[in-house]
Image (cartoon, rainbow over the protein chains, first blue to last red):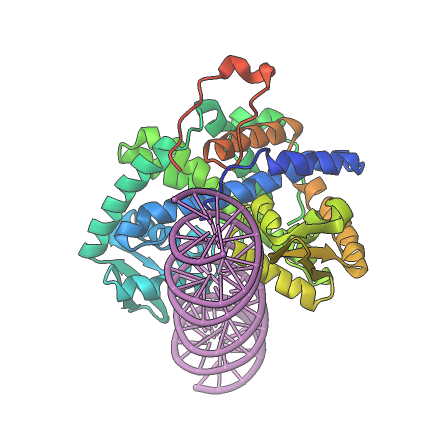
Length: 188
Length: 188
DNA sequence: GGCAGATAGTGGTACGTCCGACTATAACGG
DNA sequence: CCGTTATAGTCGGACGTACCACTATCTGCC
């Protein structure tokens, strides 16, 4: 996971200065924000994968298990999993292939639609995801170092962005944020 | 790039409710923040790659070109590029292979160290990166929809996180932030 | 009823990332 | 000076993601 030794300076701040020096002052801030998100994701994913290694899981496979653990009867259509995790159907196929090979889920036909496939969490899968969730909570989520207000700012700004990108329908009835209503456009 | 139709509700907010229902209230916020970062990165990367498609570039290859365009003489050691972009050396090898095949960069030996290799931006590479930067500025960075205060919050929270993760040495001499000095620990 | 179009899932391919192993070279220490 | 250690870069493989094409099936409409 790129266990580099720390750099003397923040390369993103440096890039921002370059942007401003070129006269792209308007774009410099968002550029830094976008780059920061990219880099943070890389660090977080590497850390999650390292934590999940003892469980023989990757983060994306864990996400499938976690989703199933909250589903009715621990069962879900491939299609629905793909939609909720917001990944391409083939990614779900890939993940389920490996999870099934590990005995953590199994595929089941759907009686009402012979095209569709249900993914079902096995007992071993449930056990595994419970342990993995405990590990992730303790070793990742509780130690991100994000402060309360930072969490709030991150989730807020990013959920706005995701909604604008068509990720999900904007929360129509939220009167507490109605005052900043003018929906910022965003070409995705 | 997962051109899903929008979901009725935000799956991350849903996950957060699940977390809280299970009693993991402390971890729920950071979990939502981490997941939001993951998903935002996915959307941003897909969008960047789409914008760069006409240039026959991907975002990671663009990053290499952009880095070179700001370097002295448009020239940099592979090792240094790897360190500044914070990716594994093999990723740079991969990117440079493709950029070289496209005639946008070329490898040059280093006279003082026969192990090392310099990457040099070609004229075509410079032209390309200039066009690509214009496109990214106009179609991505200027249209993220992030507001001023959101950019500030994102960059601030994430640069703190990156610094804690050992990404780069914390900005030692910044008296304006000295008042919140107690360095939050973060196990990376 | 039957055909056109939509939908669920999969196989194959391309790309980016990482890791481990390896080569070649440099730097250090006795 | 020579052996040990560290460093720069590459190769091969594993994994996750996306896209395209394809099959099987369902749905809707005439």
